[in-house]
Image (cartoon, rainbow, N blue to C red; front, side):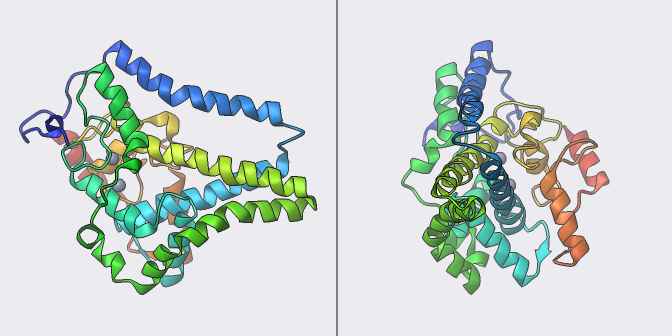
Length: 310
Ligand SMILES: [Zn+2]
Ligand SMILES: [Zn+2]
């Protein structure tokens, strides 16, 4: 760990603005691979990609994405609501199928992120190496996916003892390899059955299995990288978290990340009018169904206080 992450509490939240070069590099890394993927879609349409693949990909993206945003993140990490046992287990399984690691390790890493956000001890801060263009390029890579290759493991006994104590969750955590196989093979099975062909199974495996997992990976990782680099910072926070609107839809509300760091236990991250947050809407449905209770909806007075303090 380098010393650049250490800073006294009295330091201001922001450290100037990114230079034009820095800002350009961040955008380049974020956008170019995504454009390449978007270009592959029309090229493959009609022979290696069809409506069945697209429908399955979207369905599994929603299922596993919400498993992470509602389950792993808002519920297990932050306790934004209470869930009945069935919902609790379903959320753990759906989130595990996002292939972002077993539930207990995911939660431990993320609680550690909030405890040390953008300071020494944060598992994935883009500011780790400093603020020059080179340091930020390196930091972006580290925060986005490089940190996953670090060998150090967050101590779950310290950061997620509540989950370790739950026998059902410990079992789902251990079943992660099985759920990984299931998340790749289920779309293939459905694709094969829906089209009654091996080709259908293969293309569904590719688009609704592999590509869907890869896209969700990058969207989740972008919350760690981009949403600590660029965007608006309406709320006072001790870190550099930011609200990055272009990712609101794909991240299902998680890119309102500055608002999230300001009020981590809130069930809704898009706290202001017009801020799209699909995850919050689905939690609202769970509440209406009686599956979720004690939902921590944002309180206007509290938010106003956070805004005013800045
Ligand atoms: Zn964060
Ligand atoms: Zn969080």
